[in-house]
Amino acid sequence: VILYAAGCIAAAAAPDMAMVIAGRWVQGMGGGMLLSVCYVAVEAWFEEGSWNRLFGIIALVWGAGSLLGPLIGGVFSGSHRWRWAFGSFAFQALIVWALAQRWLPRAAPEPASARWPIVPLMCLSAATLIIAEAGALSGGAGAHRMSLAAAACAAGLALLYVSVRIDCRSIVRMTPAQ
Image 1 (cartoon, rainbow, N blue to C red):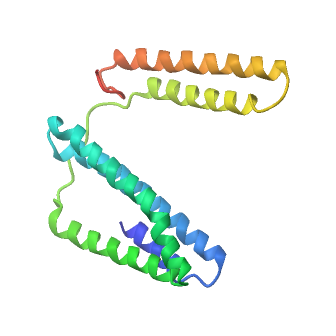
Image 2: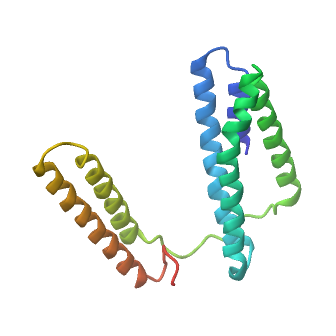
Image 3: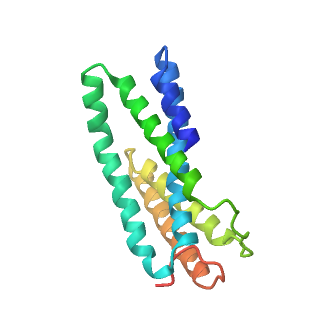
């Protein structure tokens, strides 16, 4: 939250566009961390039966922010008060920080003894990169490029299948059992 607020403050006080971009970068890093913390907190603090509903609420909030954020930003920038937008978001972040200081437990959670699912994660990452490359290959002209793109897509899908099959047999899973 502090990283997000710092990025908002930097963007609000920016003397030039380079500082606005740097502030937005810091703000984006903080916002991305907040999203990740939301998902971790749901699994750590709530019973498994309520996870789906809570994950849906998180997705709804972030989706609404993605939809309404540019609209709100446009209202502020249209009236030449864009600095106020960053300032108001920094103020909101500081309120969240103060509430977290008051309500969140001080003790760190017990470290997880389970290991990361490295092999399925590596297979999934490789599959994603191969499929992305297939998309880039398909943009060019020629039968050779199209056949390379089709082969890369098939290889990526096969690797995706392998990733899920390995994950199904893992003790520590990356995907839901169902």
